[in-house]
Length: 355
Ligand SMILES: NC(=O)c1ccc[n+]([C@@H]2O[C@H](COP(=O)([O-])OP(=O)(O)OC[C@H]3O[C@@H](n4cnc5c(N)ncnc54)[C@H](O)[C@@H]3O)[C@@H](O)[C@H]2O)c1
Image (cartoon, rainbow, N blue to C red):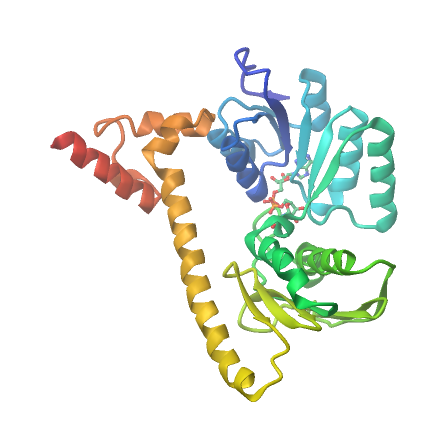
């Protein structure tokens, strides 16, 4: 089964990406790839035709297929993004690797250690790259924490905390996901953050000392790597919703906040009376400035992304569509647009046209 037409004009000097699954995450991937110069989405796979149509609205030149086999029979792709439910990751990743594609797999990568090792082996054998979707490792709080890590002295403790709202729905969109599946869905983020910092800090092997899993998907774990300790707390019930990593060293500590995208640092031994007094003010100042800056950056980024100049520069199909829509006051009416900021932008264009 094939949806859409082959685009004979598709550029060949770009990485050709096939997206498997056409749900919520696939739409994010389609938008993100659309912003890249070096890659293009040439195919999207989902048995659900309406889901396919949603992604093809973002990437109109991508061809829709019902199965990965259909895609592999019809097209050569360089990279496959696996954005399907977790239980399908192993099978689809193996199939894509065997067909000679590099694979980016959304988290949770696969469900067992054995499966992960097996896929890594296949990728090695075929000389291909395989990558889990562990995006928090590349976000600003992690990058800043890595810069500050040497200033903390010897790292002695890491705390990874994640409290979240259960809101993910089943693929059918009718019933909320069960607590254990919800946990499986969310657990990779605090776990890979924790492990990454432990592995960077010291050599050796990481040991799970104890773990308790509560009935409502709460996890408390104690982890050790040499003399370095770490705790992991994941909860569905704890409020407010938070996601942070706290790193404690012999010369200070830092708090990387993934909800607000900020880092508060408390460098130095902080043992004197003055330090104890001043420290909360210093942290409060960092929190205020950091949060304001992060929000500002987010706002500017969004404005830039939606601006006509960005759309004019971008060659992605979705940008082309937006460019077409924003070509003038007649062909695009902002009050019909779902996105308010884009509407404001359009309003400004209209005013300029009318002057
Ligand atoms: N990195 C993150 O922060 C993040 C956030 C949310 C979800 N995810 C992950 O992304 C993946 C997808 O989640 P989602 O929220 O987009 O799910 P979703 O339910 O919105 O979409 C999944 C889609 O996959 C399709 N599908 C199922 N089996 C398929 C198959 N064999 N071949 C092709 N398509 C198939 C379904 O029809 C559905 O349209 C999951 O692994 C999830 O854990 C990651």
